[in-house]
Image 1 (tube, helix red, strand yellow):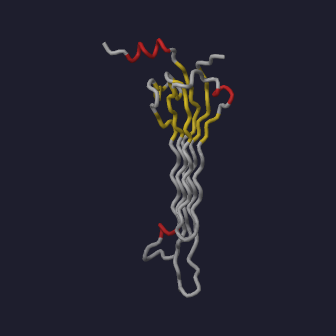
Image 2 (tube, one colour; image 1 turned 30 degrees about the vertical axis):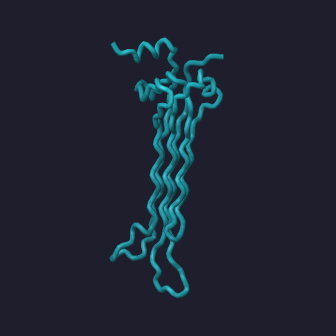
Image 3 (cartoon, one colour; image 1 turned 90 degrees about the vertical axis):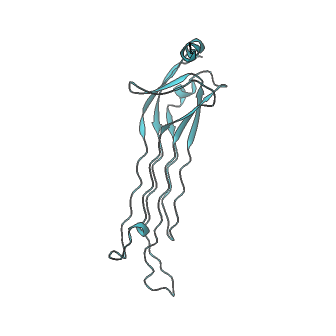
Length: 166
């Protein structure tokens, strides 16, 4: 079955939340804030592949999602970054967001990030100062890009015609 267009939901990962914690060790008085930062959310990346010939996979699975970042932890431990999602599409695939053309993948191995992951939030260790010595606040992670994308596959003849330089 040859499928030359598909509509998919693209969602990048959300950033992890910052952490609120304080040092509580036996022989250290007034340890201070030590909350870690959240991890970055994963990106959604498309790669043109010669071994793919149709968009039928995107008719079955219509959602492309990257991994979320993890929250920070005590002792200034940074949360784990979310894994990027690499999706292989046939050579000649065009990606549209509404009526706007985002990218035209015409060469094998060509990559494009179609959705960026959100940034991780700061932990309370970032908010300490000489006047604010015990901050009880941390930031939430930001949302990643999320939208409906239309994938269109050009025929081989159309690709050669577009890339010919006269």
